Length: 400
Image (cartoon, rainbow, N blue to C red; front, side, top):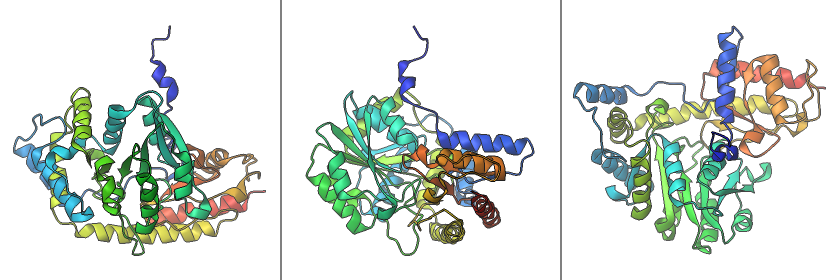
């Protein structure tokens, strides 16, 4: 009998973390590496937020809190939902976790039984299917295409739903594609969900404030209020406020679901870092002007990367509405051989050869459930992005 749980057989390590780790190891060995694999803003946490964390330490605010968050933070989250999304939640409908990932995991653990299905549009964030499997459920992948801008269509959603479906996981703007759904596009999906009263919606809004070209963010319970009672609206401070390491995520939802999530958290991690909670209060209640400034910076980087990748032979790179990722299609590169003699049989081979031969680290599309493609995170400097894209252009030009 194996000492390790059979549950581990249902999941695999995160490919994005694995690639970022390999890139760091190569850089430490002296290689000239440009990593475009990590989904993390390259600028620092704003000073007012850092000051709030320091003030919490100096004031001795370092003790346990309620398992799922300070009352002051829950109220700040309620105010944020009302201000930004037109959603009304009471503090008892709010859960605060150690990052957005814990929030999603708690919700799945609290609701899934063997045989339950969760619809996940592909390309997807790498953790969604494995979290579903860890919770005992079955991920059902609903494919998208380059032609639809990597967005789920109502017909594809309808086909994916069965009597066993418990959740739809919805992410806009998307990791890994940056695709953002307009109000009309999201309304078409919510119309489908209204016909299936047993399906709940888990909306991952982590990239809400990174929207470009006048794109207006919207979230399912906002677009269709009749879904409010079966929607968990999740978010966090990691991306918009450059607080990835502070580890604060949150959600608003029906009180019985939030209570179930609280029970799980109380017996696993208990409360998120107290210092980080006080910093998150400042993030959500303090000045918000830099959110638009950061979005403009990322839009400029997006335009740089999209333009240069579309100039690479064999690559088609759509222009996303938000987040800080692009997801270029590399159909024109498959079946060729790299300059160093590597057969490009799939997107994993492409990404491996690209790293080995040019020092540019990207994440291959199969990790996100849709090939042949790769993900670029442009959350790094303009100079690094330009050099990386030049290397990709040269790599593609050498394919035979």
